[in-house]
Length: 196
Image: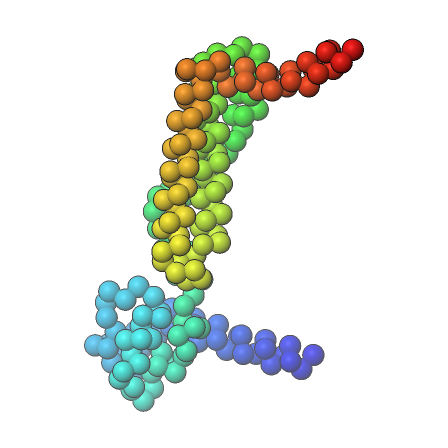
C-alpha cells in the first residue's frame, strides 16, 4: 500500500512538471531559463531537454528532467495524426463498413461485375484501413525505430494494391468473385451427391 502511494506521488510530480512546461504561461514564458537556449524548430520536449543539457542554468527545470519523462504521448499522437481530417476519414470508414450490409447480398443475388468491383474496392479499403491502424498502434517509431514502420507501411501498400489487382482480374477475366465463392460452396455438395 505504501509503494502505491509513493508511485502515485512520483507520477503526479512528473505530470505537474510536464504541465508547467507545456502550459502557455509556463516555464518558457516566465523567463527562468534563457530563451536563446531553446531552438524554435524543436518538435518535442525531449529535443528541448537535449538542447538544454549542455548549458545548465540555475533554475531550469528542463535540464533536471530525464529524457524519458519528457517524451509525451500527446506529442507522439500529434505527429502520427498530423495528416488529414480524421473526423471525415472516420465517417468514410463507417460508411464503407455499413455498405457491406447491402453490397454482399446484392452481389450474391445479381452477380453483376460492377457491383463486384465496388465490393472488391470496399473490401480492400476496409482491410487496408484496419491494418494501417494496427501498424500505427504497434509499430511506433519510439518503440521499434524508424525503419520498421516505413517497411510495414510500404508492404501494406504493396499488399493492398496486389489484392485489389488480383480481385479485379478475377472479376474481369475470370468467372467473377461470387461465382468463385458459389463454386467453393458447391464443392461439399458434389461429394454428398456422388457418395449417394
